[in-house]
Amino acid sequence: MAVTQTWNTTELVAQDKAHLLHPVSNLKAVRENGPLVMVRGEDVFLWDSDGKRYIDAFAGLWNVNVGHARPELADAAAAQIREVEFVPTFFGLASPPPIELATRLAALFPDPLNHFQFTAGGSESNETALKIARYYWWLSGKQDKVKILSRNMAYHGIAMGALAATGIPSYHEGFGPRTPGFLHLTPPYTYRNGEGMSEDEFVAALVRELEETIAREGADTIAALIGEPVQGAGGVVVPPQGYWPAVADVLKKHDILLIFDEVITGFGRTGTMFGMQQYGVTPDIVSFAKGVTSGYVPLGGVGVSDAIHDALSTPDRMFMHGFTYSGHPVACAVALPNIDIIEREKLPENAARAGDYLLGALRDRLANSPHLGEVRGKGLMTFVELVADRKTKAKLDPSLNVSARLTKATRDRGIIVRPVNDGIAIAPPLTIQQPELEVIVNAIGESVAEVLG
Ligand SMILES: Cc1ncc(COP(=O)(O)O)c(C=O)c1O
Image 1 (cartoon, helix red, strand yellow):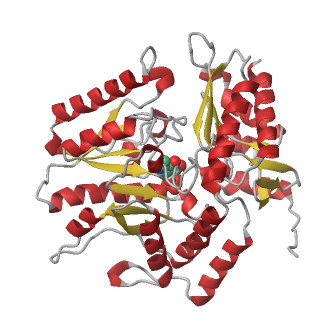
Image 2: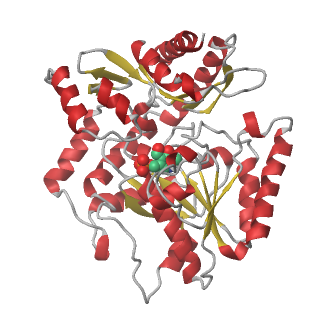
Image 3: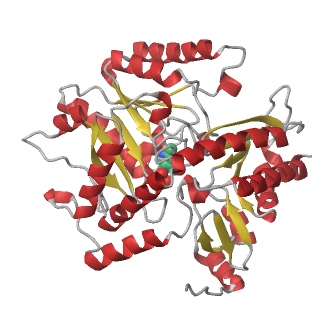
């Protein structure tokens, strides 16, 4: 039986305030108020250092797809560490887990995505994807095809290349000049950008902007377009059904590669194994992370098409890209049984079912709130957009500090979600069932009423 350790919250909080530099946090507030320290997890639940239980309605950071603390994943990590903890994949070396995982992924992803390189996370995966796109054209004798198209509201990570593709202004402020060669397009954000248009008209307008951008810049200067099938951190932007097929057609016509960033959407979250399957579009390159190990150990990667793999496999040069932890045996050894769980327990199907319920229940619960903009989502990527005025869609005044107040209100009610300036992102483990979904919906309803009236 597991021994449950007791923790000294006062001491942990004091040490955190003194020494832990938190990412994506208001550092002054954390230094004043201290962190909320989670010490234990099980399935969709987390317990803090004082023993209070929460529903983890954000699955860590949209990544704990199979739920917390699965013994078989602990066993897989321990077994691999006992066998051999690290072998690189540099210089033609390998160990069984990355070989087995690449083989498994080749079977899971649609053809022709059959070749995989691993990383330690999403940003590294997108750096890799962007560099492969440029390198592919360079090897093909088209050295000027270097520009990258992306979209506003996109989140691709915080390393310099991934950041350059990211289209959320707050991630850029204060971090110096942007990496050149990145262009941002209008996102398929129907609530604000598609007003007064039918779905087809909206898609046509977005495609026109893409065509005009290509005409202006020149297709022979553009390497790739990178996009999340469903934009996550920017506010769960679910595109109209015809958007990706139309975009993919334009890119193909102009010889521009399509990179799908499946860091959130991969491994079941949208209701299919991959987000691309929602739209029937296969990219040339795919990046992934998070759900591939459900966050138990850090792992990411990219998949490339047969054509790109052939082009990269030149006899006269080395492929000079890779991270120390590309293909870490322990991470890959955990990914394999994690994918087994996702398939065996039909978690994509549960994500679709639970996500549909959550959308409907949140819409009902918030129907009378003067501050409901809209509830949108795909599978278990859900967003409640909050506004100052429902009719005019006026944005909430940032000085109201709504995100901090909603964070407190929701935690008081025992749920962990991600409130941002304009709303609340919800993305629980894909194992979640009806009773916990009801708790989440009630807690959000009460919190919005408490904070906004
Ligand atoms: C779509 C997407 N791409 C990339 C990243 C970056 O991943 P990481 O934080 O592992 O570098 C994230 C992280 O949330 C993401 O949501």
